[in-house]
View (tube, rainbow, N blue to C red):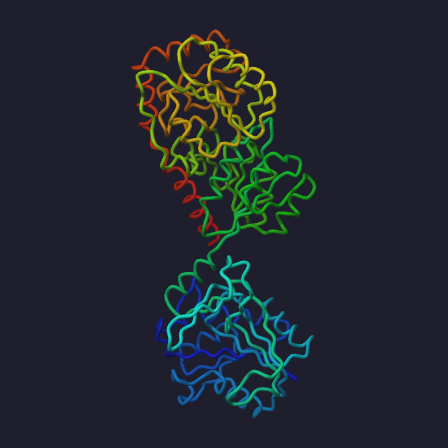
Amino acid sequence: MKNIAIIPARGGSKGIPRKNIRLLNGKPLISYSITAALGSDYIDEVIVSTDDEEIESVALKYGARVIRRPESLATDEVPLDPVIFNVILKLESEGYDLNYIATIQPTSPLIKTETINQVFKTLIDNEYDTVLTAVDDRHLSWGKNAEGFYPRYTERKNRQYLPSEYRETGAVLVSRRNVISEYNRIGKSVSLFEVKKEESIDIDNPTDWWVAEKLLKQKLIAIRVDGYNEIGLGHIYRALTIANHIIDHKVIFLMDERYQLGIDVIRSQNFKIELINHENLFEKISEINPDIIINDILNTTKEYILKLKNNGITVFNFEDLGDGAEFADGVFNALYPGSVPAENFYTGEKYYCARAEFLDAKTNPIRDKVTNVLITFGGTDPNNLTKKTLEAIGNNQEHFEITVIVGPGYEHSHELKEIVTNFRKKINVLQHVKNMAEHMANADIIFSSAGRTMYEIAMVGTPAVIISQNHREMTHLFGHNYNGFINLGLHSNVSREEIVSTFARLLSDKDLRDLMSRRMLKHDLRKGIERVYSIIMSEGMELEK
């Protein structure tokens, strides 16, 4: 006995003329359902029923058999049941002994072979007459009668708490041969097979087509990043900035299971995470099978990058000065130049990825008198420059407030609390701040480190004194006086006296503060994320070809 799939494909579609053979993401629409059906473990033959020569030609090209339907079955008014029955009678006249018959719509290009297999398996294992695909489409719905509109729900609830309401997708319907007649394909014993929202798409209009093409082009992007005390959380925040910019594609984070600090930050944003270790990294990568990997882990090795490339993965890195950089498809470095080949190295401020809150942040109005000083040295502040700075400026006799913002990885909160009580000046200590742009714009002077925070400060134009946490930050060329910063250098070489004298100069010189602000604001840092994302996706699409 044979199992067959019948794909009904009429030539006279009106919503989208000739839609069954139009190219969807580079292939004829009907080819998707043919390919999915041919891959099924349960289907012996795929038949396309059509009245159209062009559809017949395409169907044959993709491996289906074609049975031409009579004109009487090719009009708008004819339902599918007699069309399917016509094919069955034709095959049985040829001696076919049919067991299960699947109807698969050519307008469901996202249906998967595995779904077709599971529909058959559900039918066979449970002895149903018919199983068809459906999607849970619960909503607060309304009906209409002679008296007007009425609710179809008994209680208003959020969608996820409403009772399930299944809608047929039309993509796949499988029945036993003995329940099919000229005007019916569904038996008495029926079950539904629930599919995901994307597989439920049935192309009927241009909007459906647009959505389907978007989904077919969808990539899986893995972001490899960590955050912990020694390196801080700057990489984590940039990775989140990129992830939040990606809407057309799927995102998953690959994170070392040893570094809980960064994991907690990513989890708080509800992104999916795969935990890895040195032994299972490539096993995990193979398992999730990403199209693109973005590495924000500083230096990479040649071996690591080539192994990714050999698996057909497009690779982009941030701030990579390792041996692997020259083998990546692209390296972005907004902070400092490198020595990798120019064709795959994107350097300078134009590739800075600003967090969303800074894209429309207000700029700092330089006031005559300093009333608020902000101290913020990143997510971890490993050298406790917060304490050093606060002790240096806290005894200044001028009337101003101090705001101290520390990150989730700051380990000296108890010590900081004791220091704050030693000063008569008003000091506000904040942690886990969500509106950093607002705090920066409201400050008159900022003390910070020489990492990516410099760009955020420049976007609001607040005069800033920066101190490098490590030698790597010393190479960050943006932190220069011609960009509006006073750079005191490496933390171990900066004395409290130098901090005090620099601060005193800024307090007394509004013209200097105004000059610093103007130098910062001359930089256009708002379009970097668009540039970076455009390069990643355009290169990713081109390399796929």
